[in-house]
Length: 288
Image 1: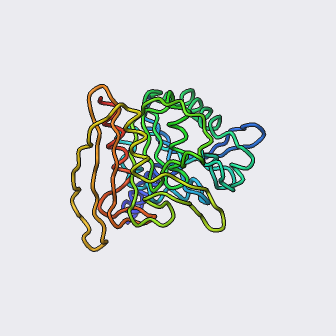
Image 2: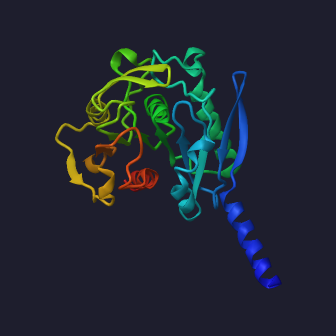
Image 3: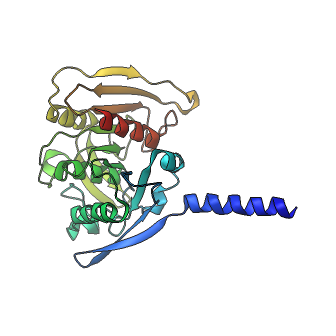
């Protein structure tokens, strides 16, 4: 019995150590900005920022990314869950009414300093820095691709579209970068066909349609023909959703992919794990 108890306790401790996050903060222009992360298995790890949606926080995203956490040690991934300023990001939507936008919080400096922190303390692979964001976090991922493409190898934006041209206030570097988009056709928060985005009583302004967003990144990458279309397996017929994949991929050009979730709302589809799908997408860019 005692031997069994010792084994049980060791297993419990090992499991807890593997899943425990480290929390830290960085002073950015008078504000302490917090973030939470899982230490990598070794040096030269890939760095993935997991970005929460509007009104959320870093730790709240952890349960959704559990399967990505599970493979992080084997894949040598350093997962980071940053916190937005007062639960929001200062992304590129000019008319957004969040405190982050109204106070013009310097989120670019926050991400730059986090990357430097992990370069210095954990010797990450600086050429394998990625971001995957949900909703408002997807908008922040777009901003990183628009304004800091030299720092990010690729991004994935979930249930989010680019701000409309009259609602975009970020300076665009217009550097081609691999982008994957996952949007639902029945999404009323981030309308697939474009329109106003609202979260609670806060309006975040107008966004482009998913097709226009996909077109922006594919044209920037130099694609002019039609994307390759495939239908993903419907692994959960009961959820009423199917997924069409549209991909631009050519040697010497960044891959640009859209996962069109037919019947998808402002949520994740059951047919795939969006975080594992994002990691597969990121790995393809490293091999190109």
